[in-house]
Image (tube, rainbow, N blue to C red; front, side, top):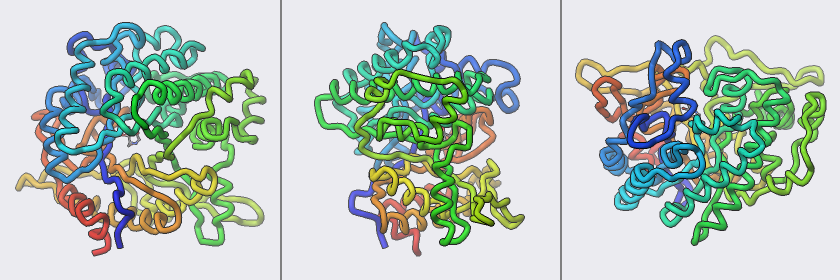
Length: 447
Ligand code: NOJ
């Protein structure tokens, strides 16, 4: 049993979580640089300034990926490293860094999948109102143009914006992620609308500027409702796309992008919050999306009871990861089916992985059998789904343990152990397993 030919096997990272080099050359600050330097924001005062020092060690990291058999690498560009003020002047050093990284990947035969924005918003633009400023979509469009002009030749796959659910929900509503705002729902809707306009303008700009055919997609935080029994399929799907009056749904963002309209239930919520916009915006937002990228880790089990949808409390026997996410492998089966039925687009798992509490043993090894078990369970379900709907790629989150946002370095998702004191990288047992999965195009999962 193996996946389709040319299935994309990769790993994913994000600039702020690994790069470090926060104050190198003329790099501008971003909201996470500022947030992680503020007391009380991050677990035990961890800082992202040095990160995994990828800024200095990227050649070593590319060599490591090659050794691990990785075929594709999803990473993000640190907007303020390239454009220190967010717009205007381009940094020579930023240009050099990403140019050299792309060249090293090309040489290693690793396909780059580039995310334009993975939460590290330029601080200079934040001071001008950030995503609340009506000019913000244009700023993103300019940034997309610069990336396409400088690096378009070496990139075939772009992801516009990573997980709007999280940087809007946690960053602009709950206030637990940078820029640590607690805006009213109506204001968050306004910021979200600007994010969508940015996606629409960015997508068109990338296609106009790149001189070769490119694929443009999304990366949504997708936490679907899972049917408790196969009979609950319909209600689970309904619940996945229902308006729960928060910013966590995928369809709030991708219906506008793909269909050019907000979902009806959400429009009623927008009205209640007094949020409105010119209808002509929707034509700007509507984009040609080539693949539906999802980041899936878990979901909620639901069932229909007396004509109502109820969310089930996990049983005490439900395995939990170190981030306390329930291990529900069948989320990888139902999730893509719901999406494909709604959008009809090929699906890429742009992220999936597991945080475990682990450390190097006395022999200097990390025998992370639970991660191997997690991969087997989740990817077998992904395979089941791929027999029914098109799934063309999988990116494990993440290459090495890194700066997990407000949790600092305390949550370890990596295939490779990272020591924040010595900066040493040590592949875990799961890295060798993933290598075999790639070599056998998935057959290893069933052995
Ligand atoms: C989603 C985010 O895109 C990534 O930055 C984060 O580290 C992982 N999931 C794990 O929480």
